[in-house]
Image (tube, rainbow, N blue to C red):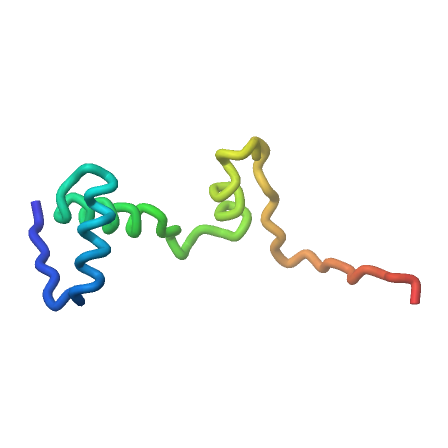
Length: 82
């Protein structure tokens, strides 16, 4: 298991971390661990296509069908009758 050290945390930021950790009922170390885990878990790999990223974002709210990827398709602009 890796060990990382964070130096020079502002006193105000450290107090905020302490309060946040207390709200969750764990140590500052565990709070920082959870923040880091959340930050790296939310990242979407750059190689995913837009449709895949949209599907992943809305998967928990009822999107069940795959979205088509539009590649090399020419989409005509809308005509507003002017």
